[in-house]
Image (cartoon, rainbow, N blue to C red; front, side, top):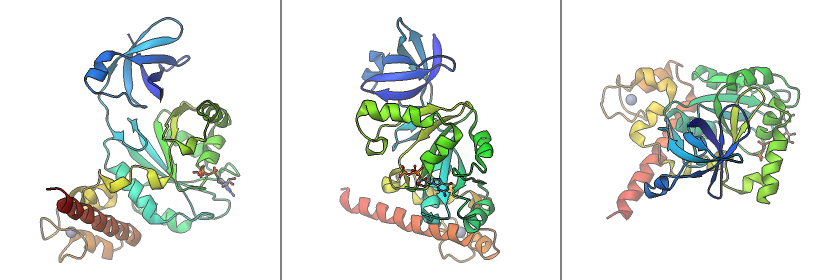
Length: 298
Ligand SMILES: Nc1nc2c(ncn2[C@@H]2O[C@H](COP(=O)(O)OP(=O)(O)OP(=O)(O)O)[C@@H](O)[C@H]2O)c(=O)[nH]1
Ligand SMILES: [Zn+2]
């Protein structure tokens, strides 16, 4: 039996890449349906090769992480594309999506500041380097920083996200000029634009990176923030972690409590103010969801 990764799922077919040649078009064996297991794009699988480039999925290896929207598994790295100019990215949107990635097992986040030819985005750069994120400055227009980004994604499975117009597609094209051809082919087959659908696909770049061009921030697993319960939210803010457990009260919310280690670190400049503001906003939202659930659920 062979092993590979599902790059694409369409109409009951799973397109598996075994690390070398062409994709193998697989059907899932009946046992998956009986077990109610749906193979996902990103799944590592074992399969049997049949004739004519076809195959059968035999086994899905355990997932290290999983996203609902887009439905994709085993993401090594979320590349959060942001910009300091046209459009300026709101730090809250960055923090929300970074918290989702940082709450998943084995998913790193990389902050990629694009359009540096227009604006160096010093404020964003300072916030995210201070918070401990790997932060890169690039320009899809001039090619600045693209080599460094290429090295940061090589050999990994990365999902790209970012607010609309920030330059995700331009960056992917700068990384690999064949990228638009791969994407164009799919859009044509589906007969619609790639962002009008929930279809997700992984693409192989020439440097060995595997990438997903996902929908923008607004739809990236942010619906109702199911993954971010208020109790676990502080853990999803990486620079808060050294101080957790050091507050005076065990159930400290780190919002305005007395003798809170997070608020202390904030006042000492060890936590960027905008990061704490985002935390408070998400905390309030998570609390509202809980209250709402309590009202509607008997
Ligand atoms: N000056 C400059 N313009 C850029 C850069 N990167 C992208 N752009 C421009 O920004 C606009 C949006 O770029 P896209 O690559 O379509 O952005 P996107 O994030 O894929 O947008 P959506 O598909 O809406 O999510 C285009 O007009 C690009 O030419 C850059 O580094 N510098
Ligand atoms: Zn606290």
